[in-house]
Amino acid sequence: MSSATQSSVNRLKSNDAGRNMISDYWDRIFTANERNAQVVWYNGAALNPIFQAAGLEWAHGEAFAARLSAQKLEKSAQLAAQEYGYVGELCSYARTHLGTALLARQAREKFDKGIVDNADRDDLASRLPMPNFIVNCYAGCSTGQQWDDMTHRLLGKDTPIFNVSLPFLWGNGADAGYLKGKEWEEASDYVADQLYKLIDFIEAQTGRPFDWEALREAMTYIKQAAEIRREAMAMCANMPAPATFWDWIASVAHINFLPAGPELVEYFSKIREEVAQRIANGESAIKDEKYRLYFDGIMNWNKLGTLAKLFAERKVAVVAGRYTHKPFWQEPQLIDTDDPIRGMAQHYLLCPTNHGFQTIKNFTKNDCEFYGLDGIVFHSTRTCRAFTGPQQMLARAMKKEMGIPSIFFEGDVADESFYKGELLESRLEAMLEAIDVRRSRNFIASN
Image 1 (cartoon, rainbow, N blue to C red):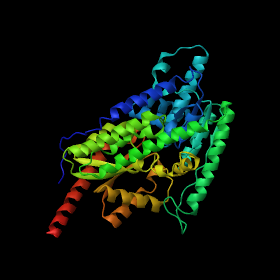
Image 2: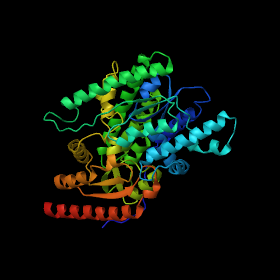
Image 3: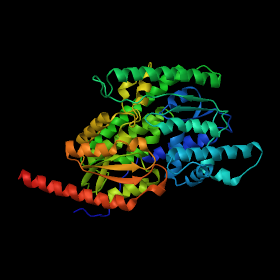
């Protein structure tokens, strides 16, 4: 029987510098209007290298909603969205960001009238700069595809908008598979063609020719950073794990939307060095690691510290997860730095909510085998149907095909009212006890 004992999460120290990189990025975004910089709001895929090459400032909707939630500053935006009429069951990323759009519009209107409102200035949710245009590039989620259209309407329909359509990868063809088959090749070409049209749209909005050399340079840095990140992740197959899912959560922003440059490569290089040094020193991320689990679901951002502590107290290393390990330039070999558009298009298709069940099952099995995992924790994200859709089938398949047990807990990406901590604790305890029983039986059978 497992017991909750005091233990600490030994977080990667190299992530400390990463917090400053995130703060610096947002500080620059918040001053964009004052600097007369052109701003694009976008959602979905990591289009930021294109925006960077075009000389724009870019604000990612999900990222801002996640930041507000992680800092427990999301309430004003969610209240604004609620008062406007958006129901609580709407994706809380979208609901929070739509609320910030309302607050940012109000703050801008006051600024234009010469009104200095200290409450607006101090409310982080109202500080997002108004966009010059909007770009949507959302995979596997119909809400995501409508989200920016709603933002466009909230802002009065005067802000230009461009949509990149990402087809779902069903994987049903006879030749279909991960990164192969007719469906994959045709979808890659389809999205790449749209990215060229997006660049034409950006040129029209900025009045400047697109800097292709800057894009090639940015993608060179991203490819290097992604390769290093994947190497460091793979090192966590070591037992005990030198880093956990929570460490990779802390570095999501960097690989997903921060500027691409030598600082990005240096940041992930230091992470890899620290992970390697921990292995050499026999240093673990979780004291007295006893269990190794997989986390399936988007992060519950306002419960990050709570969850990390809860698992660590039970000697559980959450080693990998679909949200951290299956998006964010996870196949860097696809990127041709001399001609990067098609490889970028392919990564945008590889969102972990954009695959048929067979593909999701296969890469979950591969991760469980590679990292030597004992069970799966499913975060049944209340307002993200795209991520939770296949989870019940996945749980049954993993139990049947690999004997891996799982539990579900309710929570949400940005609305903490949906979090059910007591259920998670009781279900986690029960699963850990079942793992202990299975180990005992296996030991007896082997002797």
